[in-house]
Length: 515
Image (tube, rainbow, N blue to C red; front, side):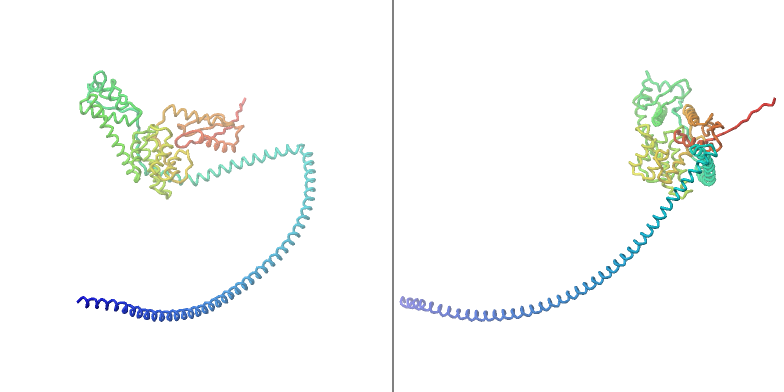
């Protein structure tokens, strides 16, 4: 058994190397045959690639040659065109040079001609100068005046003639302008005033509260005056309790405070419980009521004139104007009236009615805060309109309605006219005696300062000034110029509602006595 195994192992040992040798040789032959076929294929591919590359090279050379020929042809064509254009330009330049030479020759001839003419003119001037000297000497000899004296005499005559003609021309132009413009202006204004029927409210600095009986006065005063002191302290209003039967007078320059005090006092009288704590409670309620009233009045004003889209704060300020007055005229009523007049005038002239009404309603908005802030109501009003994004037209109308700023639109001019109409109409405003007399005195002083004025009299409540002139110093022609100068000076130096008529009177009297 062992021998068999050994024999098998020996056989395996011999068979394995032999089979491996034959397998290696077989694989080697197979690989060599594959390598040979691969090399042959590679040579075929290389040969094919070389042929293809050679073909492409030839094609590329042909294309390059064709492209170069085409580019060369295009260049030749462009060169020919440019050469032809250069030749045409050269011909034009030559023609221009020839024209310039011809013109230069013509100019030289003209210059020579002008020089000769100038020489002749110089000689003629010298001759004329000599003749003028001889003429002046002869005139001086005949008239007995020197040339300077004659010149002054002639200038005086010409000045008088021009002065007279200018005065006549001014008068004719003013008459013609009035005839043409007054008719239309009066139609517009009268139509607007007829359609506007705003009422007038005269405000004062006091309010009167009626009492059910005189015993209520003692309760309002309170023990040791504590009730009246509390009410005056809370409202800032003076309570005047005197012998007036069944009435208490509230005095204050601020109408809003006066209204708060009036409402609070009326509530206390109805309630019957009058003591410091109740007074404080009623004053707070009255303040809230007045705030609501202010807002409602502002909204009512915008609805009345048909203006919408105004900022709520501006509406509130409009409501505050109900409690403001100017020369006795209620500021809110005045603004409503100006708004309506502006809208009517704008409609007559074909302008934007809504914008005119808006500008008219807001033109005095600064009066709602001018007692609380520094600055004129015009400055404050324009700042408020800018703050709350009003249009440039409205802002300019606010700034220019008293002539402080130049009007930049017809609407601004309309608002200015409507403001003057509302302020100047009879019964609209009241003036204090001091302001009235001061204005009349200033009016007379302005006219008395003019040369040739003898006396002046302000009449018709300051609506007319009559100027008496010295007839020896002021001629009829000078009267026209004097009236115009006086009007301009009054416009520049005096503030007044409406217009002032300047009436210049020249009177000559000759007196003789029969003996």
